[in-house]
Length: 294
Ligand SMILES: Nc1ncnc2c1ncn2[C@@H]1O[C@H](COP(=O)(O)OP(=O)(O)OP(=O)(O)O)[C@@H](O)[C@H]1O
Image 1: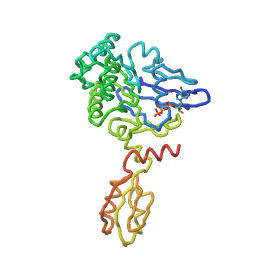
Image 2 (image 1 turned 45 degrees about the vertical axis):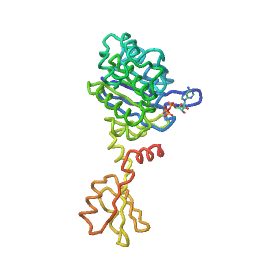
Image 3 (image 1 turned 180 degrees about the horizontal axis):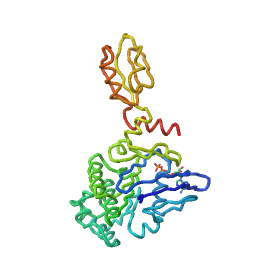
Image 4 (image 1 turned 120 degrees about the vertical axis):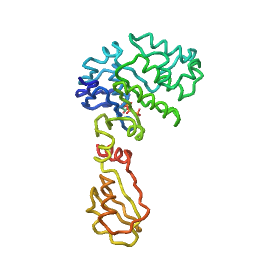
């Protein structure tokens, strides 16, 4: 059975259509990134999963149950963008408070370790930095050992080191066969930390696949090099190349397969190419192309 299903789900806020006939299914045990520009409908989708909002049309289900039931059963843990923490309680007390709400929680030490909070266990919540408070929100989301973890822009307030620690904790948690769905603006996070990327734009799925598939599908990569005055005929027939631009002695090959294009360039031509650079060989170019199209 799927962990998460959206079946023709729409959500209107008055005249605003935030989620537009969304259908998708997420298998258990996957780590999935929900990637989209501002206002794409990511938070609305997460709130629908948590039963905090009801769909205008369609159904959302969690392991075959409705969201409210799944929340009551402790199936879902969530880290939302601005969950308030009781400032007078210590990190340890907050985690204990949440652990007690669940029938079969993780151990206190395990939670602190996953969120890299062992050294901050006695610090009052009101004295934490923004990034540390985010790690506490993560600790509270995993404390009940939910099978599904929902993270809405989890690293928003974190510095580079906090991010690294946070993702390590997330991977440890997911490694137990749990399902993780995280919303992000950070393309590199979607690229590095998920098995599957669902790009949403204007409330609809604009692309869905592994980061590599999405990059290839959007043809968003380019190989650029200095070619000088040499002839450029034939560059457009190299493997993977969809378009060629030449100007001021520099050639740009737009390609869906950088490796094949480079191999063709070096082995299949006698051109003397210099200063080869790969640009847009990332999810960002793909993301921009996809969200512009849809
Ligand atoms: N309570 C609300 N009332 C009216 N419109 C809303 C409400 N919440 C969200 N919206 C609108 O619904 C759309 C989707 O918003 P949502 O917050 O789900 O997007 P998002 O992808 O999470 O964006 P962001 O990345 O900026 O957090 C936006 O157009 C937003 O303005």
